[in-house]
Length: 97
Image (cartoon, rainbow, N blue to C red; front, top):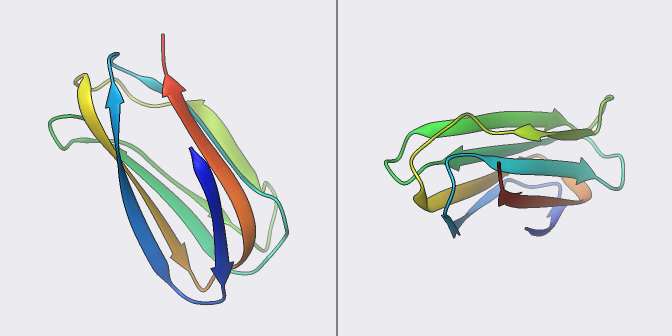
């Protein structure tokens, strides 16, 4: 997991994460209401997208949570994409059930 801050611009970053299970629990939250979007994409060890969710900063709800689709255990990739985002937030991932 981690925190993210946007200054009104666009940006993205990818993080590798070792998941020993087939699913992951996730949550993300915009802590300061702001325009723009926050997108969270999770890929499994085979590169299949098991989660693709977007929070729109200008409207409710300003948080997401749940469980990813089932994928292949191993090295997963989490990509956070900020688009015209001006604000702060945080996200986390943990091994699912």
